[in-house]
Length: 115
Image (cartoon, rainbow, N blue to C red; front, side):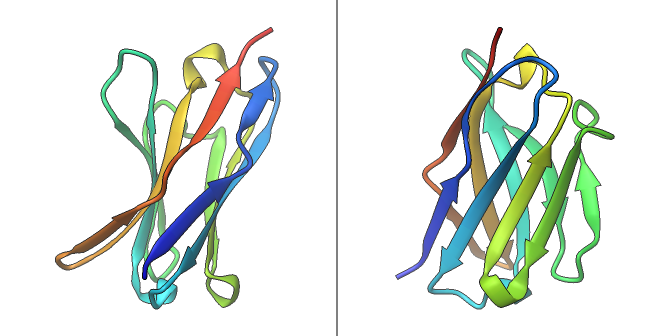
């Protein structure tokens, strides 16, 4: 059974930092491209960052220079380091892994940026 379990969300003040984790099981994590998405209140789901199986990273324009995606294939874990957080970063953050015709999602973790 494939499982993706996110953790690390919470409430943080503007300008603060958080680190999200996504632990994968039931798949050969290293061969999948992995993504972080987010969905803010009243907004569509947005792709935040992508990391390929070869660890090439790509970012959405709204998070470039502030967020860093990484992966630890030995630990089957995906990370998202977020800094200089802004209220508009408030959202449920989801991890996703995909390869060819297979795609799996985590349950999401809430990030709230508020003073």
